[in-house]
Amino acid sequence: MINDLIYLYCITKSPPQLNHNMEFKGLKSIVIDNFYVIIKYVSNSEFSEENFKKNISDILWVESNAREHIMVISKVMESGTVIPFKFGTIYKTKTSLKKFITDYSSSLIENFHNIQGKEEWSVKIYCNRKVLSEQIDELSEETATLEKKIMASSPGKAFLFKRKKEDLIETEMNRLNNSYGQEYYDEFKNLSESTRLNNLLPKEFTGTENTMILNATFLVSKNRVNDFKSTVDKLIKKDEKFCFIIEATGPWPPFSFISIKEKQ
Amino acid sequence: MNNNVIDRSKDITILELLDRVLNKGVILTGDIVISVADIDLVYLGVKLMLSSVETMEQLKSGRSIST
Image (cartoon, rainbow over all chains, first blue to last red; front, top):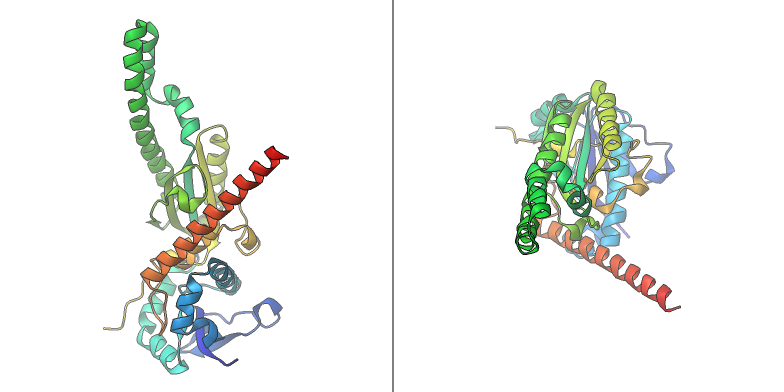
């Protein structure tokens, strides 16, 4: 099997410490334009245009390779700032990789400057709508008022009000999801240098019954990471018996905060 | 609170992983690179995987009732 395609993981400005790590067999650090470029030679059988497209539909193959992608970049990140590349970024020759680095070098430098001393953190917040609907009268004045009306009404009238309340609960839950989502987002945003909002993912992708209400990424200065983490802890603790579930992960390579422009 | 991603790599959900490594913010470069259509395929794979896990769980719980 000939490994002659170049898989690009990331670029860093400090010499990476990879030599003694057996799990990263085959990794190479090459120097181009004062950057350390972390690559691995991979085979056509896995990564040629045609075979890569075939492999993409095998989720187990994707998962294992995507995990390796993250592991390698995270390891390099231990010894310095990195510019990470998308999973499966392949060059056919060293010449074309070199051309990319040279053409984009000023933009790469600018990006290093922007992400230096910062970490990427991801926050996903979910709502358990069943729990929220049980707590709705405590959180929504409108539904509480309607509930009082139901209690004070004749059975016939109460029936109509109950139907009205069902619709109102849905509207109020959506409103509460938006306002809590915004509140949490603002709290994390205040501790960050930059933020990115990602698409809310439907249940069929998240594999949970809960509804995603916030999917955001934050670029946090290293000296504020502890504040960021304790805010996560504080909110998780506060919401323990509440309907919102907060998931924070990091530090990630700064995938969301890189923007490369070709030399003009 | 979670620790460094390297320490917990095995605990990271596939969704979180893909959300990062296929992120739209990452530079699109390379002679061969994953396209938007390919990314849709990956997410289709996730959907199938999750629904098959769900089916397995339903089957398991069904079996436990019958035995």
